[in-house]
Image 1 (cartoon, helix red, strand yellow):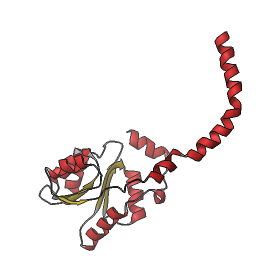
Image 2 (cartoon, one colour):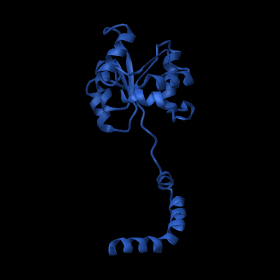
Image 3 (tube, one colour):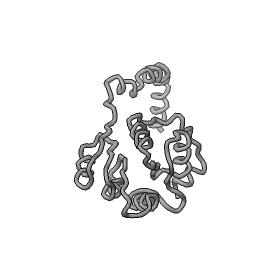
Image 4 (cartoon, helix red, strand yellow):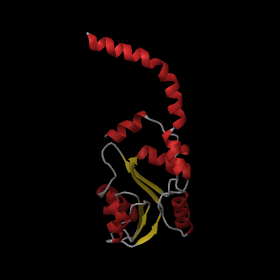
Length: 175
């Protein structure tokens, strides 16, 4: 229900989302082979539909709604139904432990994660067709994330206020 309520109140520009080119290439390859490709996500159906429309790569979309959170077992059931039944094989690309339920029923797995633990859990039940690890962050990425230039600006703005704040605190403590 929360995802549904958020989707009703929020708009996302799906053109600005970070798409993994390696995953998009796998989807393009599957389509070139004539395979049905479905975007199955626990995200709200509204956002999933917008992503699918923007990318133009999917034959179907499965997403959460106000009644059902499409994670774990619910996602598996929806995929099996979309595939045409439990006897129809499907491959699954996922990135989280909640996807283990889906991978257990899949013919092959694509693990989109850098977690060796997750890959090991998947491998225990389903052959891994492909591992797609996130790119490694470099030192420069971390330094940029710290926003050091913002710290300097804040220090320059806040430093002159320090004596005033100290006086206010002293006055409050004295009362």
